[in-house]
Length: 219
Image (cartoon, rainbow, N blue to C red; front, side):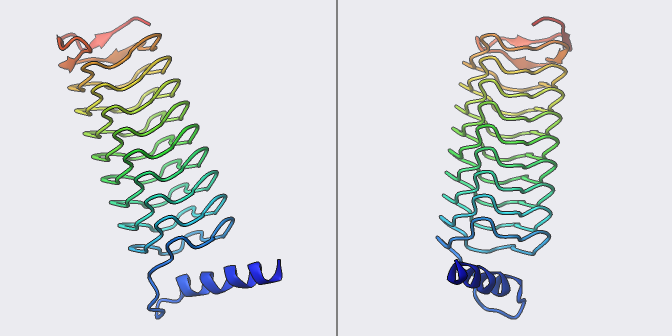
């Protein structure tokens, strides 16, 4: 236990030391580490174990977290602009009000994650698992969600303007008050999807037809 604590302290000091030349922390065990409000921009964290880590308010712009384990990690209000999280495990992670604009989340595991108010504009979430995730009031403008799994996800008030949801699974999802203007829903699964008061203006529906009315009031 002592050696583990010493190792964590050493890594933490290396990350925080602005004069330290080390930028590669790939596959390091950083589980449970406290990196709140720390500048981690550009770091190589490929395959790193960050399970339960506290990264709230941290700066991870352009960081590489591909394949990293971020289960139950706290990334609340973190800045992950253009970060790579492809195939990362974000199961039950807290990403409330997090900036994920232009981030790469291809095939990421985000089941049960909290993305309330998160910014995901122009993010690549293709084939991502977002089942049972909370995306209430999230901004997904021009996001790529092709073949993503959003079964049971909460998207109330989410903005999906010009987002690509081709072949997405929205079974049992809640899109109440969501803005789906110019959203592509071609071949999407809308079985038992709640769309009460959703905005569907020039939306491409699952059958390829373009929905003209601005407001649709049904469930």
